[in-house]
Length: 391
Image (cartoon, rainbow, N blue to C red; front, side, top):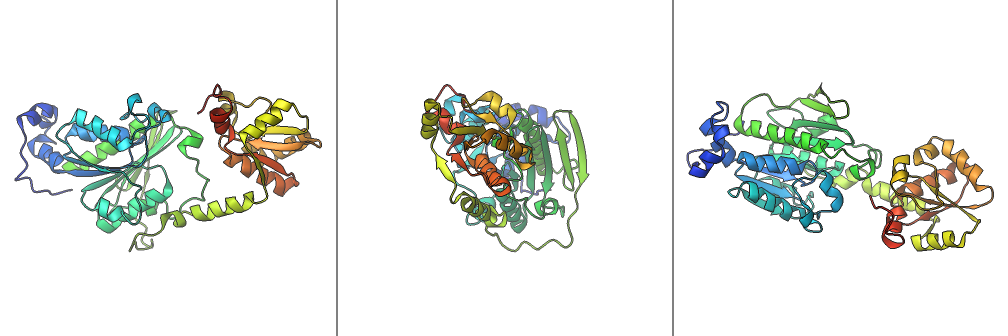
C-alpha cells in the first residue's frame, strides 16, 4: 500500500463532478480519489496493453503518468492499440497517447520518454514513479523492467498476450515474487513467436490491459486482494480464466545491478549464429525473383515456407507451399526432394528469416542447397506488386 501525504492534495469542483461515481464508493471515497490524484504511474509501452491501460488510468484520475516508447503508429497497430487513431499513422506513439490522455483528463501530468528503455537509463526513468506497469512484448525488456523495479522497490504490474491467450500478475509487491520467479531463464531466441509472427486477437490486450489498470488502482487505494503471488491466465477462445500460484524462489540469484539484457536473453549470440548459417547461402532480391518467374524458366522451383493461413492472405505466383514446421519435422524435406528432381531451389517467407532457417535445415539434413529471397513476400508487395496484400 502506498502512503502519500494527502494534506496538500485538494479536489476541484471539476474533480467532484468527474469522479462522482468513485466518490460514492466506500472503498474509494474522498481519500481514495486523493490517493489516485497523488499517484504516479510509469507505463512501459503504448501498444496493445498500454493503450487500454493508459485510457483507464487517465480516466480514473491518476495525477501523473509517464510513458516510455520510441515507436511510431503503424496501420497494423490500429486493430488492437485503441489509444491511437488513423490520423496518427506515421507519428510517434507517445505523442498520440498523450493527446488522447489529455482529451480524457486534461488535468493529468503526462511525462514522455521517447527512448528505448535500457540498462543505462532505466533506473533514472523508473525512480520518480510509485508503480511501474509493463506493457512490453519482448523478454530483454521484461527482465530489465523487473530488475529495475526490484532494485528500486517498485511494484511491477505485468501482462502479456499471444494469439488468444493472456496472463497478468503483480510482481515485487509486499514481499511477493518477481518476474525471475516465473521465468528464471529466458527461452531460446525465436522459440516464442512475436505477435507480428503469430498474431493476436485484437480484443485480447484490451482485457489484459484493463486487468493491469485494475491492479494498479487497487495498489494505489490499498484495497482488495492483488494478483501478487497469483498468475492469472485467460483463454479468450474458450472464455476461461484460471490461476497458478507463484512463490518467491528462496535460492534465486540476488539482483544487484542491471546487466546487458540482450546478451542475457541470447539475442546477439542468436544473431551471430544466424549470420554464420547464412554465410555461403545464396540470396536474391525480389526483382531477381520476378525475372526468374517472368522468364518461365523450368530451371527453378520456388517454395513458400510460411503457414497455410498466411499463404491464403497473399502469395507469389508459382510458389509451392511447404510450411517450415513440415520441414522441421522431416515431412517437408521429402516434399522438397520430390519437387526438385534436378531443379534449383528458391525459398521465401514473410521477410526472409524463416526461409533462411528452412534452407539451413534442408542443407544439414538432405544436402540440398537453395537460394533465399531477401525481404520475402513483404518486399515483393512493396517493390514488385503492390496488389499483393501486406500483413
